[in-house]
Length: 120
Picture (cartoon, helix red, strand yellow):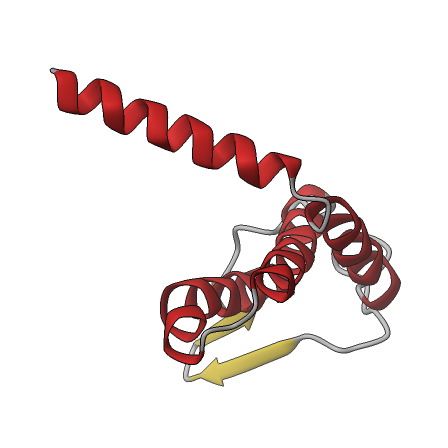
């Protein structure tokens, strides 16, 4: 029971330190605004950068920008950060920038969950 309490305290303190990092706020805001600038104005409309859709037989695989950014975020934090010793400031800013892009893609579009689509 004592170990769980210590673990909870460590998680809380780590989360608290992350929220206090200055790099998170401008990174998240700039990621969100970048997503708004390059993506389509609403669901189904094309943006400045066209979507990547892979056609396989009767199916379409739609690679949303939020999904691509989420994958990059996971790879960056789980694998690259430790292997290449990325500076903390850059890691926090890039992670928050990608998080802003993920948030924009999920928040602003009603079809964010449609990844595998059957063609007519």
